[in-house]
Amino acid sequence: MTGHDGATGSGLELREVAVTFGATTAVDDVSLCIEPAEVVALLGPSGCGKSTLLRAVAGLEPTDRGTVRWAGTDLRGVPVHRRGFGLLFQDGQLFPHRDVAGNVEFGLRMAGVKRAGRQARVGELLELVGLSGRGGRRVASLSGGEQQRVALARSLAPRPRLLLLDEPLSALDRGLRERLATDLREILRRTSTTALYVTHDHDEAFTIADRVGVMDHGRLLQIAPAEQLWRRPADEQVAQFLGYDWFVPASALGAARPRGAGPDDVLGLRPESLVVDADGPIIGLVVDRHRTRGGTGLLVHIDGIGTVGARAPGTAVPGPAARVRLRLEPAVTAVLPPA
Ligand code: ATP
Image 1 (spheres, rainbow, N blue to C red):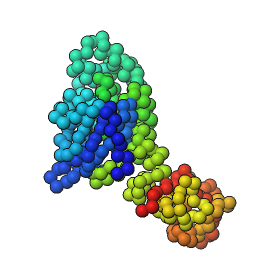
Image 2: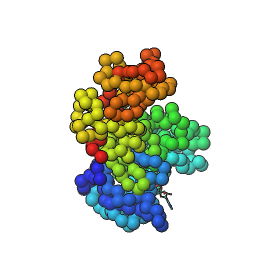
Image 3: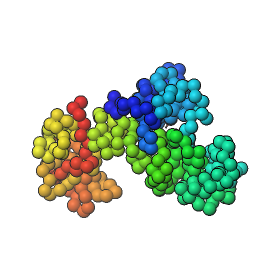
Image 4: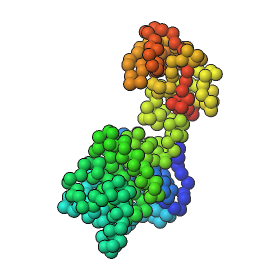
């Protein structure tokens, strides 16, 4: 498997973890490490096993095989509340009868932190999540986004050694989600929080994480820094999941193939990978076209390659059956090893 990390002895280490429910293998031999202060996102379609994996790390789901270690210590038999991990779910599950401060200080109270200490920490955290001075607010009077900020503050208050986040933004609408994702990244960085973040949303995963893992059918297909995952997906399955729709032999592009791609490699193309350009080295025949947000989307036939997507920027819209010149955008083209 690509990205089968070496043991570190610090941070989180999963070795060949499997979780089954009857005949369903929800998590299938997953190995991965998270270094201290690193944020890893697991990305995958619904049902791929990402929540089950997160729950297994939390201690909420027993594992059938494999080991979960923190700083080299096997966590088998260690109950949820003794793992020192924080949890944040889609619905932050705030206590409705406590005010904002009462929610944030909850874990500190449980840990026996004295009142003055709690107050200072609550102030710090509310500032961190952008809710300074709102400690006295009733949680029911907050918007969904504000409630998730409070839930984040609450989960960070006891300084968890690992924060586990399961789709924490998915109940919010798109614009808010994007803003909160950026803020969350900043907050995790600033507090050097080690985190495992589970989501089905590509943008969220790439915004938040240092490394992104792609899961399918319980397996971790690849885990890598965002840039590497985009540019060098391990295989067509990962590439397709990331939005690459067409796969062509690099050799078919001759001299136009991107730098770094060997003649035996395969190129993964998205609709934005080929762009109409009067000086482009590739010649295509327009088969179909449709309007997109930033111009016109085309289907073009290229000799030796077949029919692939392309994009015509601005107003220069080629008509049906037009011959067009195209260039490849290497930044949005993936290079895959030979199949
Ligand atoms: P989603 O984003 O929809 O929650 P997921 O990727 O997090 O999906 P899981 O919730 O981990 O996926 O589920 C993985 C598989 O395990 C699915 O086939 C699911 O039906 C099954 N599963 C999960 N929890 C249980 C359970 N408690 N009992 C039986 N099967 C379960």
